Figure 1 (cartoon, one colour):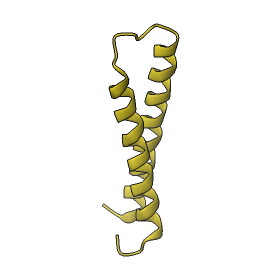
Figure 2 (cartoon, rainbow, N blue to C red):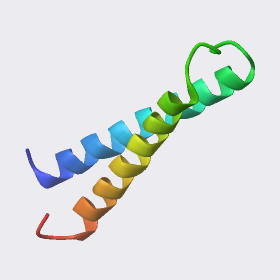
Figure 3 (cartoon, rainbow, N blue to C red):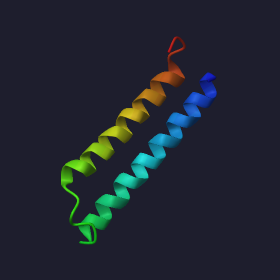
Length: 64
């Protein structure tokens, strides 16, 4: 897998996780997804942040 396709994949995963995390958070706030615990939402958002950091490091650090 080339470096640009890996970065593209990481960026897509970041966007998907961030979108799903925000959507679940908003739907839970409206009372639609009340059965999901807050920890799950935090895990999704933290996974999005971690993926974004890995994507940034992979793009800027030439040895990674």
